[in-house]
Image (cartoon, rainbow, N blue to C red; front, side, top):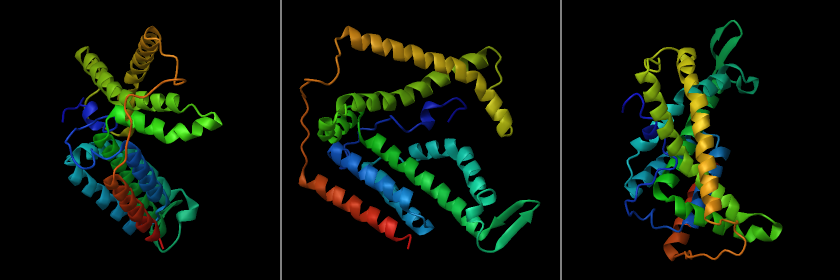
Length: 274
């Protein structure tokens, strides 16, 4: 992978149509499975439970015939931020200073409880990133939009704009890889003009090299949003009121079986906390 392959490091918004059993599931069922699984990951507080969650998601990648290395790129990109959070858990949060002291210098104390909390945090974020990546790789944007709207449709009686929320979610997910491609284009253009965006260095040096990308990337995102709004107005988009649906979603016995399996696995992940 090249230095500026930003799009290859982003798994959200990318879809690989391999025709696997996971791809053929009802998008509403896949949304429910992902939500229940992520809730179990957030509630789980043991290394064994989170390790089980990661193993199950890795098995899902194998069933979907999607290379798990594509999702690992996203974890690798977020690793500095995750390590910073883990260090805060170990040295700063007083509620995790339990157990025996392993290392102490000045006011920094590392205990077995703090290290355990840091490992749990790393595993939890890794499991969440892998779950979201698996949902993205196995669900097309249109399927995600239709599934989200179908799930939120019963709440329309309470005044919730289901169609508009689903459309906003679809646009946001689709914009992630587009912004990564735009950042890659801007970075290559600045390097060709003598910009210092390559090389290693510490966290502060790497952050300083990324700052010149923020303003042009922000402007490009605003311009893309304006063009999208003009295109929707030119095509007469007036919201979801009174709209019909060309695609009608139907569940099969295999969909309910997959949902039951996800619920059982999520319950097992949570119960391993105790």
